[in-house]
Image (cartoon, rainbow, N blue to C red; front, side, top):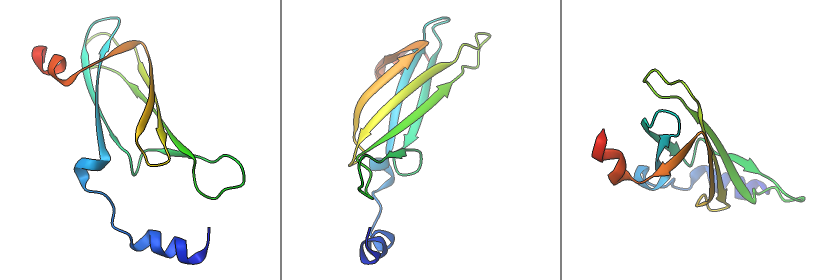
Length: 107
Protein backbone atom coordinates (compact mmCIF):
# COMPACT_ATOMS: atom_id res chain seq x y z
CA UNK A 1 0.00 0.00 0.00
CA UNK A 2 1.45 3.34 -0.98
CA UNK A 3 2.23 6.04 1.53
CA UNK A 4 -0.33 8.46 0.07
CA UNK A 5 -3.09 5.83 0.18
CA UNK A 6 -2.34 5.09 3.84
CA UNK A 7 -2.33 8.80 4.61
CA UNK A 8 -5.68 9.21 2.83
CA UNK A 9 -7.18 6.36 4.86
CA UNK A 10 -6.19 8.11 8.08
CA UNK A 11 -7.98 11.31 7.14
CA UNK A 12 -11.03 9.80 5.43
CA UNK A 13 -14.30 10.02 7.27
CA UNK A 14 -15.50 6.85 8.96
CA UNK A 15 -19.12 5.79 8.51
CA UNK A 16 -21.82 6.91 10.90
CA UNK A 17 -22.37 4.80 14.00
CA UNK A 18 -25.64 3.36 12.67
CA UNK A 19 -23.92 2.19 9.45
CA UNK A 20 -21.12 0.41 11.23
CA UNK A 21 -23.14 -1.53 13.82
CA UNK A 22 -24.70 -4.89 12.91
CA UNK A 23 -27.35 -6.16 15.34
CA UNK A 24 -27.97 -9.91 15.39
CA UNK A 25 -30.50 -11.91 17.40
CA UNK A 26 -30.14 -15.60 18.27
CA UNK A 27 -31.92 -18.21 20.35
CA UNK A 28 -30.11 -20.89 22.34
CA UNK A 29 -31.02 -24.36 21.08
CA UNK A 30 -30.76 -25.86 24.56
CA UNK A 31 -32.81 -23.56 26.81
CA UNK A 32 -34.50 -21.21 24.32
CA UNK A 33 -33.01 -18.03 25.78
CA UNK A 34 -32.94 -15.17 23.29
CA UNK A 35 -29.72 -13.21 22.96
CA UNK A 36 -28.75 -9.97 21.24
CA UNK A 37 -25.26 -9.24 19.95
CA UNK A 38 -23.80 -6.15 18.27
CA UNK A 39 -20.89 -6.27 15.85
CA UNK A 40 -18.90 -3.11 15.16
CA UNK A 41 -17.85 -3.66 11.55
CA UNK A 42 -15.01 -1.14 11.79
CA UNK A 43 -13.38 -2.47 14.96
CA UNK A 44 -14.24 -6.14 15.43
CA UNK A 45 -13.50 -7.69 12.04
CA UNK A 46 -10.35 -9.62 11.19
CA UNK A 47 -9.03 -8.92 7.67
CA UNK A 48 -8.42 -11.85 5.34
CA UNK A 49 -5.62 -11.26 2.81
CA UNK A 50 -5.42 -13.45 -0.27
CA UNK A 51 -2.58 -13.28 -2.76
CA UNK A 52 0.00 -10.52 -2.69
CA UNK A 53 -2.38 -7.62 -2.21
CA UNK A 54 -2.01 -5.27 0.74
CA UNK A 55 -5.77 -4.73 0.80
CA UNK A 56 -8.03 -7.29 2.48
CA UNK A 57 -10.27 -9.30 0.16
CA UNK A 58 -12.77 -10.14 2.92
CA UNK A 59 -13.27 -9.98 6.69
CA UNK A 60 -14.18 -12.51 9.36
CA UNK A 61 -15.69 -12.28 12.84
CA UNK A 62 -16.30 -14.95 15.47
CA UNK A 63 -18.51 -14.33 18.49
CA UNK A 64 -19.26 -16.70 21.35
CA UNK A 65 -22.35 -15.88 23.40
CA UNK A 66 -23.44 -17.29 26.75
CA UNK A 67 -26.83 -16.47 28.24
CA UNK A 68 -27.66 -15.26 31.73
CA UNK A 69 -29.99 -18.11 32.73
CA UNK A 70 -28.92 -21.44 34.24
CA UNK A 71 -27.99 -22.86 30.83
CA UNK A 72 -24.41 -21.97 30.01
CA UNK A 73 -24.21 -23.53 26.56
CA UNK A 74 -22.11 -21.35 24.25
CA UNK A 75 -23.69 -20.11 21.03
CA UNK A 76 -20.97 -19.52 18.45
CA UNK A 77 -21.43 -17.18 15.50
CA UNK A 78 -19.18 -17.21 12.43
CA UNK A 79 -19.61 -14.16 10.22
CA UNK A 80 -18.00 -13.47 6.84
CA UNK A 81 -17.98 -10.01 5.26
CA UNK A 82 -16.95 -8.80 1.80
CA UNK A 83 -14.21 -6.22 1.22
CA UNK A 84 -16.78 -3.44 1.80
CA UNK A 85 -17.65 -4.87 5.24
CA UNK A 86 -21.10 -6.10 4.19
CA UNK A 87 -22.30 -9.40 5.67
CA UNK A 88 -22.25 -12.16 3.04
CA UNK A 89 -22.32 -15.37 5.09
CA UNK A 90 -23.31 -16.32 8.62
CA UNK A 91 -23.03 -19.58 10.48
CA UNK A 92 -24.13 -20.63 13.96
CA UNK A 93 -23.66 -23.54 16.31
CA UNK A 94 -25.58 -24.08 19.53
CA UNK A 95 -28.50 -21.91 18.45
CA UNK A 96 -30.54 -20.41 15.64
CA UNK A 97 -30.90 -16.93 14.19
CA UNK A 98 -34.14 -15.09 14.92
CA UNK A 99 -35.40 -11.68 13.83
CA UNK A 100 -35.72 -8.57 15.97
CA UNK A 101 -39.51 -8.86 16.27
CA UNK A 102 -39.26 -12.37 17.68
CA UNK A 103 -36.54 -11.25 20.10
CA UNK A 104 -38.69 -8.40 21.43
CA UNK A 105 -41.86 -10.50 21.60
CA UNK A 106 -40.78 -12.50 24.65
CA UNK A 107 -38.03 -10.43 26.26
